[in-house]
Length: 181
Image 1 (cartoon, rainbow, N blue to C red):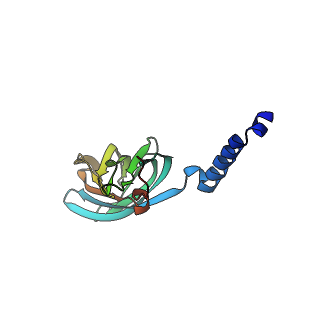
Image 2 (image 1 turned 60 degrees about the vertical axis):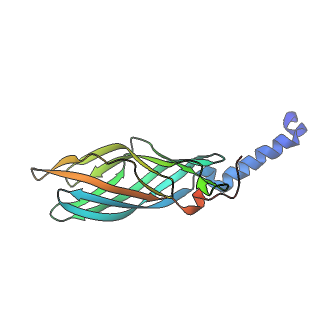
Image 3 (image 1 turned 120 degrees about the vertical axis):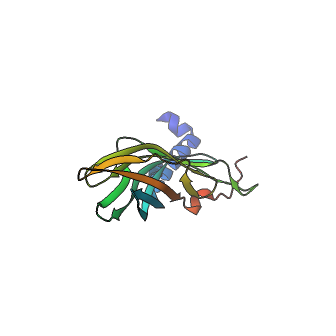
């Protein structure tokens, strides 16, 4: 205790950190992001909206490292019923969002999001891991075509293809008023 009393700077820094983490909720404020997806099942196409939630795990000078905590999207298919896409709770999904470089008005790097998904059909749950979305703008898109997955419904084999998956990063995460150099 004497050590803390003799070092007011250390006390100030400790209190500041404590109040900062309390005010920010430890960095655990959920950040909602809109999602758009295009899903094909056999020849039927459904375009759908949804939402994704992420939490900042760590903030660096030029970027944020985030954990994606929730994803909900999907659609209703005629003759099949609902097909929902959500996160696989057994695997961690993450994102790296870069701040804007004020010198060239571009992000400091390529935004990336790695998602581990569950696709729920009326009779089966399919997994699609390590789905990578990337972009140099605030609109993340699929980095590559996803594989077509097969599933059964009422004894028939069907194919599901997610041809588009987009996530819009909120502008306040990408903007920066400081030059970290």
